[in-house]
Image (cartoon, rainbow, N blue to C red; front, side):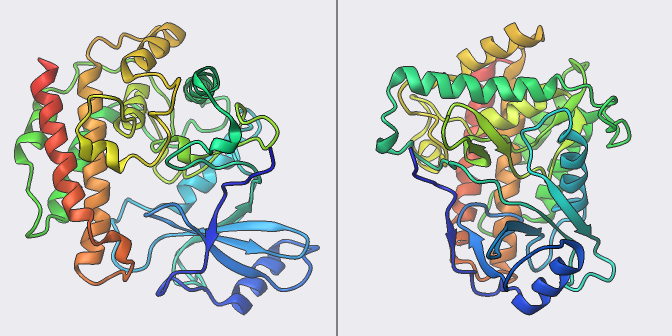
Amino acid sequence: MTESLNKTVDVREGEELDSKLIDSIIKERIGGLEGTPTIRQFASGHSNLTYSIQYQNKSLVLRRPPFGTRPKSGHSMIREYSVMNALKPVFPAVPETYFHVPDEGSPLGAEFYVMEQVEGRKLDRTIPASWGFGEEEGRKLCLSFFNKLIELHQVDYKAAGLGDFGKPEGYVERQVTGWNRRFERVITDDVEDFADVRKWLEDHMPPGEVGHAVLHGDYRLDNVILCEDNPFEIKAILDWEISALGDPLMDLGNTLAYWSQKGDPDEMIAMCMQPCMAPGMLTREEICELYAEKTGHDLSKFDYYLVYGVFRLAVILQQIYYRYYHGQTKNKAFAGFGVRTNQIGNYARLLIEKSGI
């Protein structure tokens, strides 16, 4: 198996980097690099901007926030840089990081960091036919993916030096009220306000938290690099920009908000950007059973966390659409995100009706 799915494209209009400036910045901090860099952009991702910086003898990745107005607490480069640094010795499935440059005085006009480019397989909507996967292989990949999330949630974050990474207590309340406020700030004329969903989330918060762990915040099959020789092995997890310490069921809720299955609304299945409906993949119910068995956590009220994850997804897309709506980005791929926001918000309503909570 030699096919790589870690795709890059020409840098999008309005998101260009000065190659001479980038070369100077990187060579000041990393020795032994040969030639001048070729800069391309990774095809996936709609939030932070991710660039491939290709030297003759080394491949690097540069991450920076999007251009234009962005949420004050979002798109934090130091957050993902710090958590990967701390996790690497105890949880190897993260890229090696090299340096971070803060907002203040940044030659790019925004904070950014540089890390290794991990080579391997990167999935998108489907599993390539060339892999020859059937139900058995699909199930094996699915189990590997969710067992890796469980492994992350079982990391001793204090021993890893992440005790001051954030305040884990009260995480559920802060997230729910915080995402609700973020949505209020980016409502556009063509999108519903979903006041009923936001109120339900605030009125039905669980009375306590099952525990505290390192949360990835955006754990999806299209956010991992699989080993080239063994596609059942997760070599690296990417996109740690909204990682935190908190209730791990919130992280599972975020992940399963992206996880489509038979019986879901057609528009939700159409939005799915990972192969969660491939033969052998577990259903959300089966994943919850696996998670409960491996962790001992009570998932009897998991419907709440799923609604939270779904509505959070609507907020994320609306934040991106808000920038497009107001002309702060020219990426035409975002033009339909307002429609998606409405579809996802309506799906959250449907889940509330079915939850019985």
